[in-house]
Image (cartoon, rainbow, N blue to C red; front, side, top):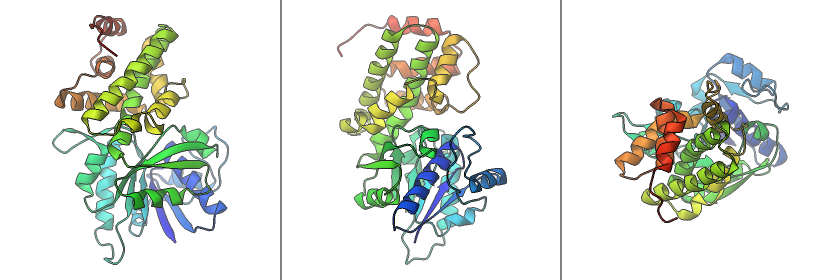
Length: 335
């Protein structure tokens, strides 16, 4: 039996677990799925088919959950579905729990589900793929991303996502786990490109939200999406990612969904900034990522105008109109 652990009982963790449960119920492939939660309240809610973070979403089937990290010991697949800032702690927990694993069993495959930039012990900004490889050098790694609102996935609505790894057998393992579910999972061999696109699209969505909130019009939003995609592609090339990745589900697909409207937390965050209002309390990963992303770009000596503009708004208290004026004052180059 394939043993699968989803670390994180938030909206995305619950959504992933629900899709895995649907796969188990619709196929003859036996899987044991369990969610590792921080609070007993989350465990009790999932047992009833509910997610505390998705109170308005259609009831799903009961999902097994626990607060005991011992469930990781014998896991074959571990989905890390916690906010970016909690990834390092999750990696260290996995390392601790699997260090005494029997030598006749391969290490668990670790699937990175957060979209953002991590931070090394010395303060350097790092892609989550780099951070995971540093802390879990013996574990097979994959990235799981694409256009997917958690409430729709949890409710059983269809979605197409991508899973990326340098090892095709790892990708096949993850695809098989979702076979028969509401998720159609495409393979990809560019984990760096998928991880970078997922992190950057949240920042671009905040910028697009600012344009909407400030009433700059559809023309401005379209310009931000287009030039934002160019930023992602330019940075991805520098990071030796594949251009096709940026124009697939993890890039264009996820960017389009995240910028579609206030259903997206990052878009809603930007709309509030544009209106001069306090941003929503719900976590917008782009607001947590942008400073790390701007720092990573600076260390690579690459200019990301939209990313830097959002960083000024979110972390340096610049006025929105001042930021817009500085962007418009830039000399226009070739597309």
